[in-house]
Image 1 (tube, one colour):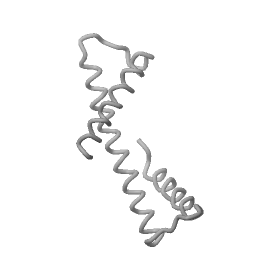
Image 2 (cartoon, rainbow, N blue to C red; image 1 turned 60 degrees about the vertical axis):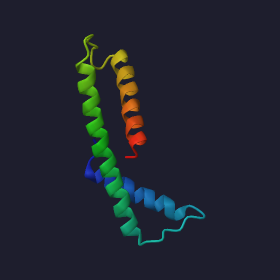
Image 3 (cartoon, rainbow, N blue to C red; image 1 turned 90 degrees about the horizontal axis):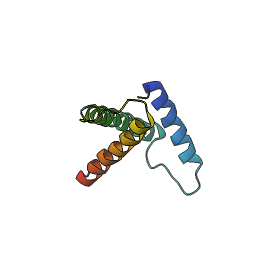
Image 4 (cartoon, helix red, strand yellow; image 1 turned 120 degrees about the vertical axis):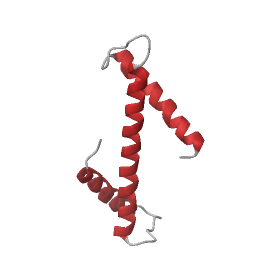
Length: 93
């Protein structure tokens, strides 16, 4: 989970870079656009945390236990997260 301060920093850097990108014009005020970027980052982080907890529960609930932190756990976790994100995208979320 990222801190609000880190998300604010990232949003500032993104708007800075966008402003320096040739061919990109921010139609709204920079602060307005930055606030929307910030809210998107925080929303994504919250959703990612929710999916991560669901995935962890799913892996812990398997009949065959996998040691958390092991290479196998990491691979299974990554696969399950990919499935979770694919399901979100298929629902249009």
